[in-house]
Amino acid sequence: MGIYEPIRGHDDAEEQDEKIKRGVKPSSVQDEDDVEMAVRGRSGTAILIAGGVGGGGGLNKIEEEIPKQKQQQQKQQRLVSLDVFRGITVALMIIVDDAGGVLPALNHSPWNGLTLADFVMPFFLFIVGISLALTYKRLSCRVTATRKAILRALKLLILGLLLQGGFLHGLKDLTYGVDIEHMRWMGILQRIAVAYLLAALCEIWLKGDDDVYLGSSLLRKYRFQWALALMLTTLYLSLLYGLYVPDWEYQIPTENSSTPKLFSVKCGVHGDTGPACNAVGMIDRKILGIQHLYKRASYARTPQCSINSPDYGPLPSDAPTWCQAPFDPEGLLSSVMAILTCLVGLHYGHIIVHYKDHRDRILHWMVTSSCLVVFGVALDFCGMHFNKVLYTFSYMCFTAGAAGILFVGIYILVDVCRYRRPTAVMEWMGMHALIIFILAACNVLPVLLQGFYWRRPQNNILRLIGIGA
Image (cartoon, rainbow, N blue to C red; front, side, top):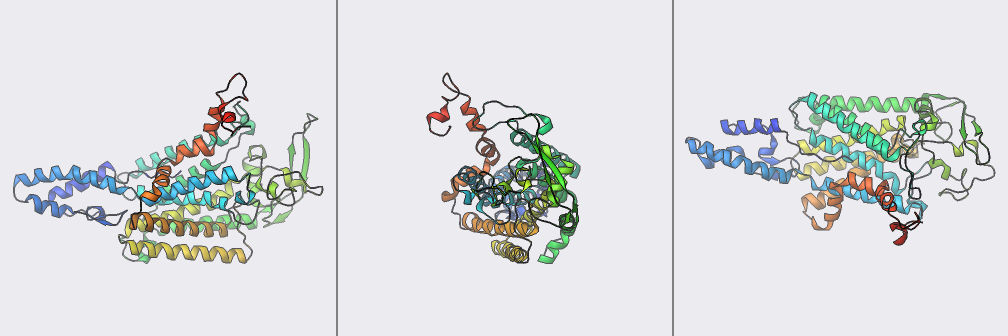
């Protein structure tokens, strides 16, 4: 879930200590300022003056001061507003998951449009990007960092397959296990793993050596990352609007017969962004296989497919043939734009690293956020509608801009004005986001509690407290 890691590495700390001992002011901004919190601190030079440069006791004094300075820096290094933002996003995810069935307006939009639930995934990806900029702001070994990033991504990927691949059968079914032939390959954690890995590799390898003085120098330092973002956008738009989507078929099992029912969907078009004939679904069907896609497609809640729209419901009498087809909201092509959201978050993290003053950071963040929001609205007005399932470019721009604005508000409240107590719960949730996601959002805790029952599975703990059926 984009966990924020300690920023300074062991090798980097040794380098700074050596510079202090030699009487050289370290090049890092952290000896003079805390780069995340924009707080003034004591410099290595000040310690030398206080301890006496000339005598041997001066060096002993320095060696005593260094561990204390490190401890003080470690306490200040964590960006509290980022934890709070992550905690708010986790809480939002739990609310929309639990209340979405009762209040369909809180659920994900069936197709075009935006609801509260549609901001959760972009917020997580945005947070991952900021975290990566802070984690890799100074590297001792690129190869080691790459290896660790790949291992972390693989862990997230495996965890996602276990939690969302069909291994667990839901709240009302105590059985578990999945037929690999029908296992869902993509999911929330899988998408985050892919975006995390690509953004991490960008930050490790595609970073210039230029010094940052003005906004233009910041863009120049990370010009290769911006070039990659442009390439990803071009690739996504070219495939979405340029690929030819032919007719296709799918099968669904029937209750009264062992022979599945066959449905044919007529397409034969270019650039369609409707539920049936878009390039996002076609690529997933060709590469992943239709049997590995999400079975409860969001477009099954559209008015064409449900009489209870925007909730799931019985099919209308004139329902089109594609209504019951699988469709993965975390598909391959749509994940290209998800990576772009992560890269936008990376840019916000770069502003933290290179700008020390609160006002400078807020100004740069708000300019970027406002441009993204305005551009997203303009694209939606021109016909490229907000669509979470396709992860359209307009959707990426608007939600990334909204994430930036919310982050600025939290940053001002928590890190500038120091209002920590009202956000303490959100901060704790943000620091334990992954475990909360596993236990609550993936229903692992309710499933475990259901495993303890009295004589019959129906008499379980959840039933006693009024949650289970």
